[in-house]
Length: 504
Ligand code: MCA
Ligand code: AMP
Image (cartoon, rainbow, N blue to C red; front, side, top):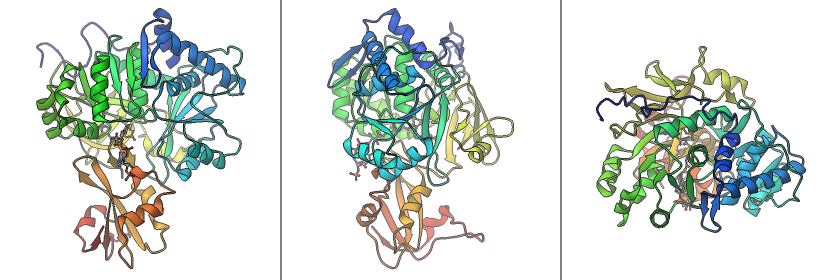
């Protein structure tokens, strides 16, 4: 640890944290200050279109906002966006926020029924998608929905009023945490997202000289709220990759002299053994999150690349919460200290992590009962994660009170998978859990009671129309019965103790 530094504060000695530092109120109002100050600096690179300058993003998003406004969309309307990373997608996203529209980022792997759930719940007026099949599914879900491509191919309109939305207005609805079967929408305001971006700017010493290698999808908080919004907030630049491929990451890092890489642990697992891994030594900072980074992988990665990965912890509902320090020891197996503005407490037995701060969302979209459960009476958000702090104050996440499997950084809600499997005529009883896996962190496993052996391929075929492939069970155990307590509730911690009749 550097002498005199306080690893828990995260702050550079000269700068205090002010959640309203971005000042201008909304995300795009804060970003546009950079666009106006120096429009010629490059901002985003995508493999098809090359570099886009700040001024290009300003002008292109202004034009798309004009089209959306002419098509009748107005502040507060929801727009579902589901597309692979590209500069067109970024322009469309920024245009929506500039008009005060509320973006619903949606996984491109979703199937018809998953999309129909989001459409039915959030009632978007428009959707922006990059694939004809998903476009058709969306039209089936709501015939009145305006379904557009990422280029928003509509007639231009008169210049609308931009960047005028209030800080407290909603910016995103992120679908997550389906303990009741289907995901619910976490509503994040511009102020929530600005507070988080400002905390990260300070804590990670993120400056306009940084260049992020962004191989994460732009439909989750990690790629979108941290990677893209952070880049725009700091006036920095980013290189977008359509998908994650270690070779492409290494090539892009070298070609564009990247300084930052953000990834989920599965990405670090795939990079660490690559023969060119040592090239990553040229980066300024590597950050991991969305799932636990095993301490052994942290150490192997350092040996291969000389990078001490900085692990951090966040949630869709809160954006980023806790981070290892930039200047002091980055302790493997821990997530570090609360970020500037975030208050954290450990409550109950086993201790649950509860949080408060300007980054924390105000509630789920139209879910009063869920909101009462999500917050304590004195206003703290229950994360559902279990944790403890070591004697130096570093937080470790050592379990989950909520039922959740995290596979490759994607959340899978066992209840949703169980509901889909239960529709199978021969499945009498089913329980879905996560099993440790070196590459994915956890993999989805189903325990079935059925009159015959059902192979995993058959099971996957059965849920194909209902569930995105990353939610499919990868292993199936046929068992005599599921262990239940006196109240009839399945005891998931005892599932692996029963007699297995077949495995597939
Ligand atoms: C892909 N597959 C997966 C996953 N991803 N299976 C299980 N879990 C996954 N995460 C399967 C596909 O279904 C397919 O299998 C096969 O892998 C190859 O698909 P492909 O798309 O080529 O996979 P990939 O490109 O290798 O994807 C791996 C990945 C990706 C790059 C690690 O999963 C990924 O981008 N993960 C990041 C997710 C993320 O951004 N999470 C942030 C959430 P088959 O052919 O058999 O169907 S935000 C969050 O958690 C909070 C706020 C936070 O703290 O950040
Ligand atoms: P999501 O609902 O996709 O926002 O996922 C949030 C969840 O991811 C958290 O509640 C944690 O369970 C998990 N998570 C995020 N970052 C980490 C991390 N660094 N270590 C362990 N779990 C994490």
